[in-house]
Image (cartoon, rainbow, N blue to C red; front, side, top):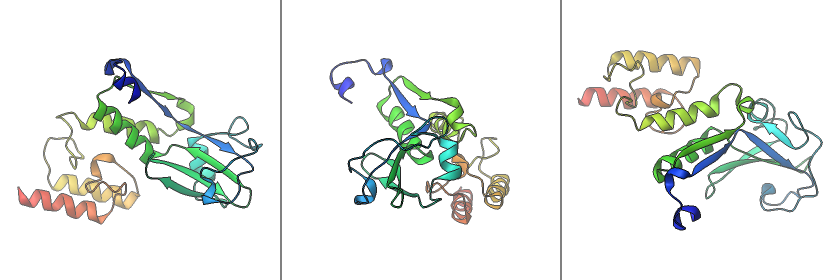
Length: 195
């Protein structure tokens, strides 16, 4: 925002998106590790001490092995804290990447860059960016899962498959709660019946 306020053209600004997390050791068990001094970097990480790929965080740390995920509502990012090891990990997840991609659209800045592709080897974060960036297209309709330009019973059938397979799809998330469940099916059914 400061760059925009100082007159940098919005099309020349690209936001950086982190597909990794950074960790800190010696973080006292105060405020779940938030805004607490640290003594160093722990001797663990995906490829180097103190740095974790997102896939590694999701598979081994997020609400696992005594690490609890917390959400900072102002910054719109998560962090992890383990009171036993006194380790705090800052990172981005699908929700924070969604918020950042939405910010890029809202501010109409040039775009995004990310570091780095292997940190999101299942493309969960990158898919979130793709979904937000393409949401603005007239071709994409929330709930139109078969992309035929219509909301109909075929979309409900596809959404039931998402629910049964426990998969997430941005266009199937009718109520915007980052979960695909029966509530999304009801919402889609209401839209179809009201037409």
